[in-house]
Length: 347
Image (cartoon, rainbow, N blue to C red):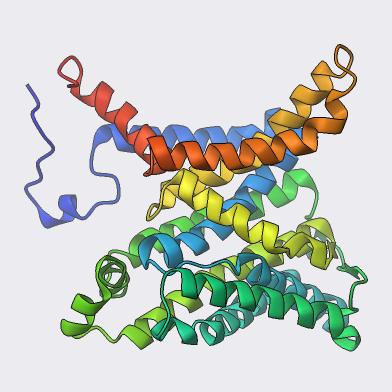
């Protein structure tokens, strides 16, 4: 009878997928993702693309908040940097979308590192307020620097093309978004197998002890802000190219709170939790909207209260997870796997 997972080589112990069950689940997931766009209609493809972009942004925030313990409420502002940088480079300078996306990621990483400087002296609520200030400063610059961003007017981004094909259709951009989501997930998983990632985790667990062990807090905190902002900038750039339009309303503080909810509900310090949280918080409003439309014929007043119901459910879900499952959906998924792996002795 199997009583544990044992490895006889370092190679097996360091593998990303250590058991046959994990490998089978990964293959099934990849097959599902490959087949999905061929059977889904436009509505569900749009939702899938939104989940993919949110996953990249959530992974970025999880690197900073979940793995390094640096609370950030500036996610929306950093996404705005990525979106406007990509949009302006493509619209004004004619850069290909993939070049402007990379440039947007690097620019957002630099801005993120700049606003991460106070993290050396601030932590907890004070750091959260500092990143909230970054959010407001970035949006103020975006809405008032009219010669560059156009102010409050929308920035129109040309259609992205690849090999002469327009790719910002729901079907074609699906492959771009989820390929980059996979790259971000794989890169992040491997990051925390290096000494950089272990330093981030040490800072999260106890920054004073980490400094005593020789970890340069200033260097690694700035690096965490830069890497996190890199992926957040990619989410913003993909939003710009996918939607063909960039407006400041897409990057308000509500977006920052939404992404923070994603990593809390999905599971702090987990790449899979970022995916779970992004999917849950993206699909929940769509589910409530569809439910409201279904009930509209029977209860005509539903249309007027749906926005308020969404906000109430949003807050209630966060509270319930914090009370009953602080480790998020990742922990629930782990419990399910462990139950079947250990059955009939799952206790």
